[in-house]
Image (tube, rainbow over all chains, first blue to last red; front, side):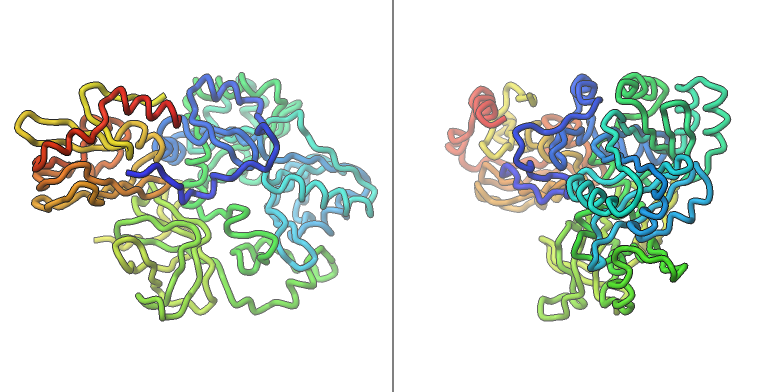
Length: 388
Length: 130
């Protein structure tokens, strides 16, 4: 067999041009563990620690631990922080009625295209935190600085923090086991989704990118290695980017650069629900552009294929099994679902969609079922795969 | 560094060949190949009874990352294929030289064996690329 030119899962990205990829505080730890490393957005990160399918299954049934310190953490504080974020973000942070709550949102440009998707945390009065993607770091930083100038607030990148995700049904018991503190136990055992616990210099959020219950832990970089090791000893399986991608795809969670980019509006990216048009008195960047496009011609859907094979990004979809039929759209993310044991995909297609579409694989035309864009969460299939 | 097993023949396209004394060969893919591809999810094997010419594309291994063709290094008839890989493609990752064999072929032209690499030559080839 030939040495491969990978079709890739979207995780193999070329270096940006600097001579050395960034390393997280856990880089040496990953090397010691024998992780298979890869370059992701100019960061050196584990692709897997052995079998990405085993890692995926561990998260669905017990717990996995992810180093996501490549993501950008920006703290925003000052008298007009709230007003700034209400203008900057498509979702309305007024929904964060008290400190200790978080909100998923997109950040739009003036044309309504998505600059990034991110989570904003209300930490304390006048103090918010944004966690955004590694790949958009420069763009997001420049955009925040540009718009923050109009408001009485400052942005500070938190390079002193690491970010570790523990995900899966055993997360709470593992993290409480590791932290060994009554205060942590009390807070974490009743922590609701999209809420946070602040414990001294740590902030633990009940958020994640896997479709399972779990935490994302923002902690001083100097604490990262010991916390990682303790969680592994307590039963969390180290997981890399390979499992991260199969988990989020099953959960129907968007990946920036695949389901959306600066050329796509949230309305055609399955993210219309993150845009708060009410109250109508709130203006935000991109609002006018979205209001002008209330009948989008495309939408994001899920696809399931029970035939043998794997759907891959950028493959084309047709309304009938021949190239002269109508091109319905194309796949934005695709791969093999370990939990469903078949191929799944997310795709952007024309709004009028039939129940089935057709794709060309090596064996010929294959019929795929159109589904809502989410397949497996909290240990359960969300769609009927329809096999006999 | 991936493992190169002694006592086997190899191709530059990362297949291994084990010669059975009865002029039969087992064919599989090397540790280097499975490591490059990652977790296997699907394996398509040649039909029993199929007649292959050396160089023919005869099997497909598909991993989480990509699909890859397997080429037969030898001419002959397919005598058996490893059905357990259909149920459990992960065996290819776990034991590429043993339980992960792909198919068994009758050797029709022993001269073709001269084109194959020995373990040391394959090791050198990998060292130049890994």
